[in-house]
Image (tube, rainbow, N blue to C red):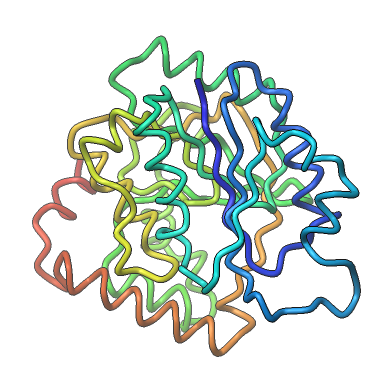
Length: 277
């Protein structure tokens, strides 16, 4: 069985969320899709109907056994909201839990195949497929664990993306046509074995947004394989909010500081070991 959670904040319902949910409903052995809406209750979109109206028009409210819409009273943040649904997966002992962004395009059959692949490899605790942009260019979302220099240089030094160090960080020194056991897989698509999460722990709720995917993959990676598997390709309409909003950049910086305070800024033996392996 599989549970799926999607955390929302002022989402593009008709362009992204509704088409994605309708596709996910075709997954065999799907137990439930959780829509965790962090949008402020007072928010009124200027160019469209409310969330409840959109859900009613889409017909998804007629399937409460499969789709559960959960509006939050406050913005809980990314990981804390997902944890609400992940705890349900632990409670009901579902085999897998999929954390997915609303801006992902994926076929139901692909997810079924990924789960079947993980069934065949019980040592795999987490899986992420190959991810591309809408124009087909690859997004290098399987990485080594970052140092403070890696994240600062990528954000503030022009042209850093093409440096040897950044290519090393993004695993572009490896053959990306083959599976890789990577210690950091992006939070845009995390197919998690529920047993692995039960052992490693849920998302660390001290992060409001951004490094929670690094933290969780790293925790799972200690005992399980965390696999980038290019056998499947999905599309990610990545918005990179912290590159366009000063507020989101500040949130990004604050939470990265929490991450490095937790694991170490310059002396992190586990980071060195995992990256070397």
